Image (cartoon, rainbow, N blue to C red):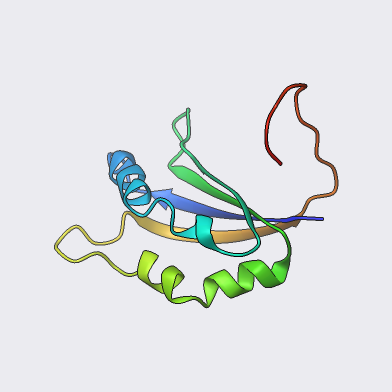
Length: 109
């Protein structure tokens, strides 16, 4: 069964759109990785400063292969210029998928 990795990012106030733009600029990088199943960038809808980066993988080995790949290194390199990191803190959460249900008619995994 799949594994889920959630990176909880504390984003400074007023910099959420910048974070979203950075993810959009590297869209498609992870999609090409063997074992990748799903990505979601979750923006908080309340006053929290924590964004969630959700990825689902076929297995732990697929995730580990991604984190040691050149594409991962490139995507996580510090941007050039004065803007610096958007997140001041991150924490990686790891889960195995025990149950999975989808709405009738939903396409995909």
